[in-house]
Length: 278
Length: 292
Picture 1 (cartoon, rainbow over the protein chains, first blue to last red):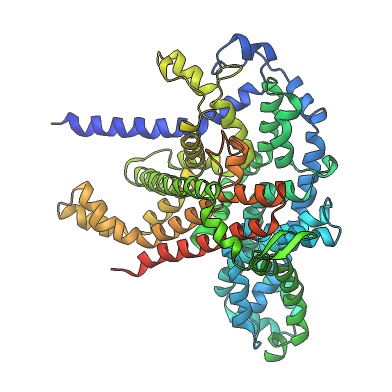
Picture 2: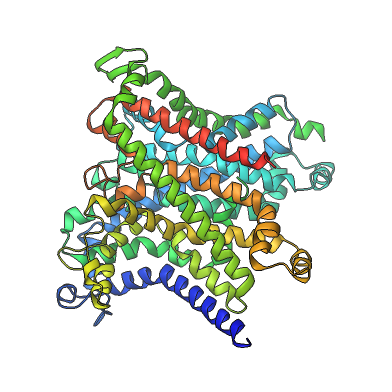
């Protein structure tokens, strides 16, 4: 009778341990595999640890596999898009919650509609529009799409933060002679730091992850992003070069891993905000 | 106060650029898709008004029906897996995990932050059988279950299931964190009171916790639904829709029809269908919120 709770506890602990292993082991395996020599994949079973540190895989992926280039492209596109998303989300969000104008409700609903739009639905006409404007195979096409499709959710998140900002603070600032632009920059932005970080984190993951837009609008290798690059990696290296494939996949994961290790609480909050508040 | 917050010039400056961009790139194409769906061919190439003919073709198209079935199966199983296992994990964390709460949560959330294509490539190697056994097959082989060694993503019978397992693996921790947050918001006196009244674990869950968790369950289901309707990236990265059409989703079929076969009009019908499925599906899930 006394043993029962202990047995139960042990079983549950084992279940939790098993789950943690299932969730993390594939990643560990990937990192070890990225450091294996080509021969190890043939001679040893897949689960064996790496015999040494064969960094050549990373060098191959970075240079021959064009990862350096893809990284640069992804980074540029993502960063430009993020800057605009944050600026727009804060200004539009502020106008929709704190400023007084006639069409406010309507515009607010109009922006909210976009949360439901699947990218696939807009893709075909967007391709035609870009084609007419000669924007296919340009960085601009991607950045514009990234910004526009990031707006709805970001504005939604920012407004939910702004609603809890007391009006008295704004009033006090206005009485002290603050104009609207000063008010935005010196009062609203500093107070919205948490909201801005949430939007940044969430959108960074979304944009860095984009595959659909970049594979549709870009076929010039010089402009490809990490995700499209990875997708065609196997074709370029051949399916036998596991080491280089693992190295490139590991590399593409690095920015996320780093960000997550340093800021895991912020990242978890940012990522889940889209579902919890949406 | 009013002259500052009612500043028309500032409002225009704040709202207009985003509004224009959003209209041109998100809303206009959606409406445009509706318009395109009434035409056959592609712009500049046999582009003719065909009325509702595309819609009629849609329901006779076997490829479309196959993609729909694949997509619906995927939605059903991934939703159940993500939300169900997420809830189960959250309950484990809340009631049985005493130490290491933070580290376990951090580790379980890990896969959520990974790029989809990277996960797809990783799992392609896990499931691999040729030229070398991948992780799964080599483990099976090692523990004496070699009769289960098979080309997991290379045969139609297991490809979709393998994809579903991968996507549950990715997002389970995400829903676990959401449910865990909701569980922490439930005051512990309620749980204590139920315990003192002799509530068993099962009735604690069905009578006390699940009514309180209803709102967060609904949001999670909607979130998972809208994510899975779009089924594209992960399937493309893991199996490219194959073998055959075994993992080809609606979005992938739309993509092929409009970009590989240049049937823009017909592709637009599929695009419109995906949009409607997304909107009505989430409406139906939301309906459960109001009942009872």
